[in-house]
Length: 245
Image (tube, rainbow, N blue to C red; front, side, top):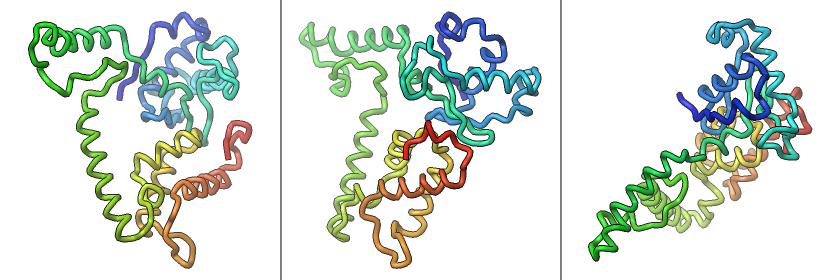
């Protein structure tokens, strides 16, 4: 795995916090998933970083503290970098925001390609190298967006067929795993991704039915909320002031 690490980290409010923080935070970013969830066992991490268990625990404590000087300060998290979601589980609060930041070099390279393949040919009265490139320049643009759009169209066609045969709106009854995880991650950022995936797999296995009567699911978002409440009840140690029910 890899992560984006910005030079501004050394000049912000973490400056002077010590090696416990400046070594631990990049480690957590590199080992976390795309949503910012990561497992940190101080004993194992201490061996990998070549430090003591106490130093790892100290770094975790600092990163979980409120920081009113943080560049990403918000009222909900008080400038914290991470929150604890389990015994060894943590969630990096601003990983997604920083992951989407495009470097100046990446943006300059994209703009140069766009000029050579689209803008310049048009000025010369020529056809652009690719009609697919004839779109506005956007930060964080994904080169595979066209293929994703085609896949989404295929999914929509399949959902329309299912709607005609069952009379239930597929978009509300049977989401894709991406839709399920996106909703769960947005509404319940403290819910571990692995547990949310297990909940999705459960409904796939039972055929998207609920209760002893095995009634078809009509709004999968309700299933997400139910599964999350079950996980929350099994983890009484979670900080309730940071959890949205």
